[in-house]
Length: 264
Ligand SMILES: [Zn+2]
Image 1: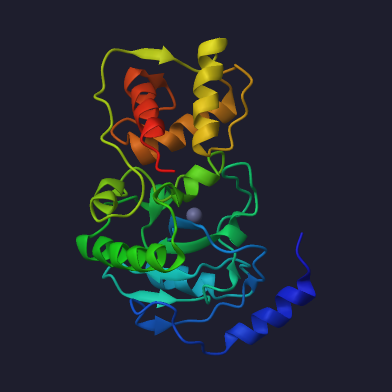
Image 2: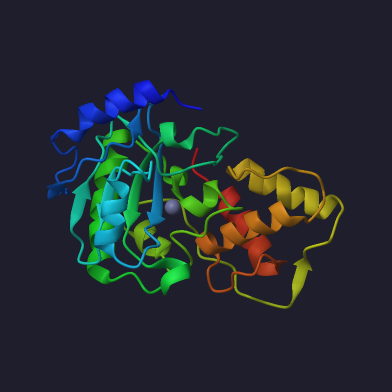
């Protein structure tokens, strides 16, 4: 999809040292895996690294063979390293979609947060790391005027493929610090309301609400695999106590409240 020559020459250019865009960054580690933005950044996209440890993840993100990168990297002690200048497109989102657009790398600034992730021993994010993520995110959303509902998880934009940063990520804490859109989830009550295999107008209405919030959700009235993935992604971000892809009352209520409180 991208012109390798353009990518290569730009990559060479940014392999040189550059000046950090954020005062939160205390180190620079240039990644060659970059390209030109097609539009300005209006999304802040959060990830976990999902690798055994931080140093291997940082190395991978700067390795030309990996073809991946991000703008910022936050280790478990809260040290922030910048890999790619914000003006340039980093390669962290992959095949993804939000609000009907698919070039999420062009639209976003990406932060990789060190955590082994679901495959290598998913664990709580240390307080110092989260404090650093909050400070950095605040700086980025302020400078780029990123809307609260444009602070997203990788799993929000790629629900079929990604789980990060996952249900242990403290979105509520970010919200309390003024970052992101969040609402207290409705309490878990009795059983499922809509579940995989169901079909009809109620499923279509839920799909439409998820789509209208921004998810890449088709409205076909069938609670199919892609719908399970989107409901699961929604739960990881907004109703993390139970992540099962089943649209129980609490999930639907939380979606409804979130949607109606969405800032314009
Ligand atoms: Zn990710």
